[in-house]
Image (cartoon, rainbow, N blue to C red; front, side, top):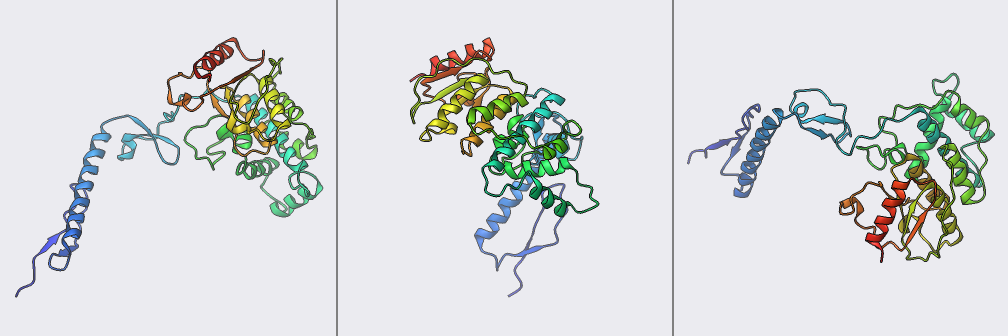
Length: 331
C-alpha cells in the first residue's frame, strides 16, 4: 500500500507559506479540525487588519501608549492623544511641586512610625551613598522617586502620580509610567537635608499636606455620628480632613470602604490617599467627578449614602452635585 497523501499547511493569504506537511494517516481527526480552525482564524485576522488599516480610529496599546489602528497594521505613527479617558488638563509646575512635597510628608509619616527609619536621617543618607557609589550619576531626585516607587507598592493612592493625576493607560503597579515632570530644582535635596516633621494626629498631618498643595481649608459642616455601615459622601477638603479625623477615633470604621469623595481635583485625590495611609488602610476611598452622570457605570455601587460631609471650600457646583447624588442614593 502506498504512502497516504499529505495536506500542505496552507497559510492565510499574505502570510509566508509553510513547507510543513501533515501525514493524514497519522494525525487524529480532531487535530486536523483544530489546524483548519486555526487557519480560518488567521485568515479572519488578516481580513480584520486589512480593514483596520484603512481606518484612522484610535486605540490604546497594552503598553499604555495611545496609537492608531493604522499603525497596528504597519502604517501611521503613534498618535499623542489618549482615548482611554477624557483628556486631562495639563499639569502645572505648581501641581508637580505639590505632589512631591505632599508625598514627602507621607514618607516622613511612615518613617516616624518605624523602629528603624530608613528614608530620612544620617543612617538613610549613608545607605544611599553606599548604594549610589561615588562618583555617581544618581541624583537626590532619583533617590526620592525610588522611595516613592517603594511606598507606592503598598499605598499607590498616596505616592503614585498615576492615582493622584488619574493618568490613563497604566496598571495599578506602575506608579509613574512615562512621567516626565520634575519638581523645582533643590526640592528633593532640601527634603533630605531637612525632612519635614511628622504630626502625631491624622487631621494635623492632612492639614500639612493641604498646605503643600496650597489648599486653604474652609469650615466643615457638622458631622453626624458614623457607624461601621454608614456610607459617607465627602465634598470639600476640610470635610475630608474632618471625616478622616472621625475615622481615626474609631478603628472599627473603614475609610476606604465607607467613604466616597466627590472631586476632580488632584489635590483632593492625593489628600484622600494620604488619609488612607495615615489610617493604616491600603485602599483609598472611591472618587467621582462632580459632573458624573447619575446613571453612568461610574456612579454604580455608591448606594446607599446616609451622610453628606461638606465644607465651604468646595465650589457651589460641587455641593450642588453632592446634594443631588445624596438625594438619588439616600437609603
